[in-house]
Structures are given as C-alpha cells and as structure tokens.
Amino acid sequence: MPRGGLARATNGSLAVTNGREIIPVVNKLLSLPFILKIATKDWHPQDHISFASNHAGKRPFVDTTTIFNPCNRAESYESRLWPDHCIQDTPGAALVSELQVEKLDRVVEKGKRREVEMYSAFYDPLQSPRCSDSGLAEALVEEGITDVYVVGLAFDYCVKATAVDARKEGYATVVVRDGTRAVDAGNWEKVCGELEGLGIGVVGVESEEVKRVGRDEF
Image (cartoon, rainbow, N blue to C red; front, side, top):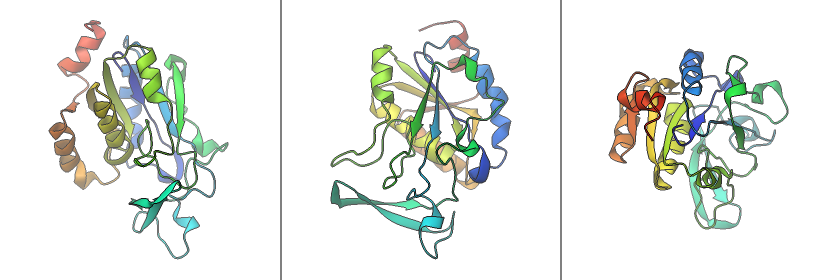
C-alpha cells in the first residue's frame, strides 16, 4: 500500500481457516491514503494444473505435481495441489462482498494460464523464460511506488510469494500480520523468519510502519 499496495481476499472451496477475520483490517488499510490500492485474485481456468481434480488419484492439500515450463521443459518445480477454486466467471472467483472494493484503484487477475501455478501477484516462479506476468510490476513503476504493504490470503503462499517478489523488485516491503492468515498455521513463525531474513517487515496493524501511512510520511 504506501506508494502502492496489495489487498487480497479469498472465498469458497479453498477458504483459509478464519480468513474472514482479516476483512476489517483490510478495509481499515484501504481507508488510509495509499497512492495505489490493488486487489489481486486467482482467475483459474477449469482445467488448471493446481486442481487435484485434474490429476487422477491425487488429493488436494496432500499431493503435489511437477510443473514444467511450457516454453522450456528443462525447467520445472513441485507445487501443492488444491481443491478447485477461483474458476473464471464463477461466484467463487469474486472478491468477498465485505471488501470495500470502491476504495480499490484496480484488480489484478492471476493464475490464468492452465499449465502454470502462480502464487505471486507479480509473475510465475519460472525464469527461463517466464510465462505469466500480471503487469503489476509495471503498474507500480508507472505510479512511482516506493513501498509495498501486503495483506490477504494465504500468508504462507500468495502473500509470501508476493512480498518476496516485491522485495526483489526493489520495494521496501511490509506484511501486515493482522491482515493475513496461513493455510498451515504451524508454519507461521517459519514463514515470518524467511520474510524477515529477506528484509521484509512483518508488523501489526497498529505498528509505526502502518501509522506513518496515515500521516502521509512518504
């Protein structure tokens, strides 16, 4: 958020435990004078590679699949499988109704290519070459963004990946802990340590990092 921001809310078959608890926090952040307020959402085709239902005998949350770069099969990575979720043009792909969407500047759709999983709001994890890019990085540059605050679901997947890529892009990056929940709550401290090790702050909604946004100190 300050000088840019990301707010993400998930609903439906891949709902995160206690995920709706973050909505008041996200709405509070949306009321602050961030220069750019962006929501992201998964926008998957029915045959998306991350759905366990598209892999015979595979179980959501338990099993994984190998994802190959469609442009270079020498590059691959393992990815967890999920229940069908956020299918394009269905109610399950909509932002939650309680989110104050009128305060958003734009909505970024991600995960639109069936062959590639994309947790980050920026782009997929492939390198040689990259296959999917949401255009978020370009949007932040156009607006002269310097700081990115990340909230949403889930902390240990999309929030983490987005924060890591924001840092790689050179932004001072903060995750607001009150505005996120994890799929695997037991990994919370581990993920916090990984983020902090990369210079990414994990702070509370009443922290000085958030309060200075209200004072417009950027």
